[in-house]
Image (cartoon, rainbow, N blue to C red; front, side, top):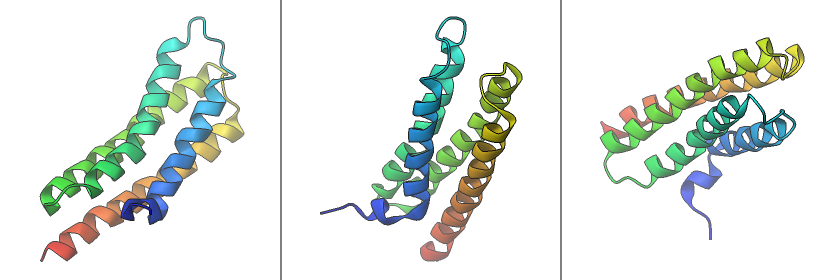
Length: 121
């Protein structure tokens, strides 16, 4: 048995991103960078967690709120990635790859939010 949200591409991509971020940050030196490691891990994980929690809500307004929070977590990842790039913890290529994935997730979450509005009418 699976939950409905597990079939959503946006959820699957969000889990993939969190996994990539976790693996990537394993290579970071812990000394002096714990705050960046912790923040980006929590923000990237928050995306899929809020998608899942939103799908567990009965009322569309509540669901939509969790999708907005997930979208906010996407945006939260952007400046942390930028700091990682500036501190030379990630390459330009990795920064571009992850930022592109964040843009895709943002668009998918926007569509999910708009779809929630349409289903509610």
